[in-house]
Image (cartoon, rainbow, N blue to C red; front, side, top):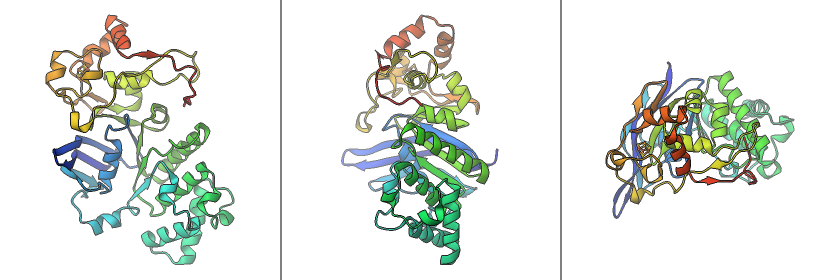
Length: 352
Ligand code: SF4
């Protein structure tokens, strides 16, 4: 496969008085041109740290402590700041959760777009304005020739996120990192934004790293996914394979927490406990305090990611777990009992 982005054994640490805390622990993945890779996990799993590391935005006292990042064959994790600045926006576009963190509320959106286009593409002011109107049209802003002179507060949340996507595309990047791009939006706008990202990916061949905690978004938009837990990738492979046959108890727990969209409402389960803090990372498998099928070896030894491109998993008991769940054996019951059942049917959590 023609990989655009290659991340190899990437580690990120934060220096503290008590020593170096590991936020990313040797993660590896790649993205091909025109592909959407989903990075999923709870808050604190390390997803956003991974996105920030790729664009060189790890703030001090954090730093990359190991591994490499290649973009189109060029190593970028060790570049000086001015070279990274040239890559940001031009070769890698970014879409963040809150559009207002990307847009200056005091400047008309057209001026923000024109400035970005001129900086990255070197067009004249007139050419850049034409390009800005085209970009707004491409991202679904109605009547872009007149809306271009509006201020951000004159747009709805969904329209602002479309403007942010236009800004991310202004430098005609090869790669877009979309960090929770739909979290602040209501369900119907979420679907429209995901459809827009898919369309741009298809038509422009842009590669997308889609960071989210939402399995529904992953299922809809991605071809491959990587599940993160406590700074590591614990399951990865084709989205269909993983959604159809997840081999890691944590991935399966995430899926059991999704409300069914069309089937009859059912009791949902949630994974007990919380993501471990960096200062108190458990020995062995970091998931063991929350895992209903943990055995002695899980408490002592950290499982490696084992498998192929189709599906790989980091769990000592993945094979046994998968077989037992497939046959509906007693171990599945213990898994489900371990994942504390809670009735969320009446909750206002939006299905997607
Ligand atoms: Fe659970 Fe052990 Fe697998 Fe970790 S290695 S997920 S504790 S069974």
